Length: 136
View 1 (cartoon, rainbow, N blue to C red):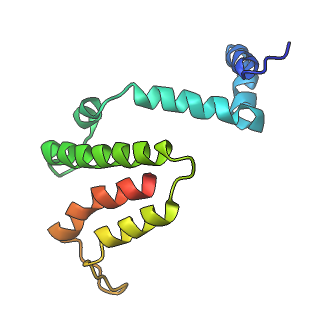
View 2 (view 1 turned 135 degrees about the vertical axis):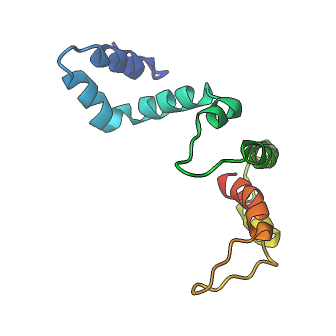
């Protein structure tokens, strides 16, 4: 039976994943027809975990992680990313050139040389902003 809304592929994938031999699961994982299903499944699983859950689970071998600082940087990134995405979705044709220009301007004062890269506080503080422009 064919479904024009894509539910047919999802239903087939669900049934194949129930196959006790494991072959159905391999088919879903490897066949291009199920790529959209796999991406949607991954997105739904990762979206169910908020930043607090992730910060609780994150570990470092011999180093303490400043989770408050990470949360602050994540929130900075998330707010700018959502703002940029909303602005671009509002327009029929997103202005990629403007996004790239703004990303470059946000780090214009940072100069690095390939043979001498330094990650000081000034650079680390710009990472969330730059990443928001890249992902938007």
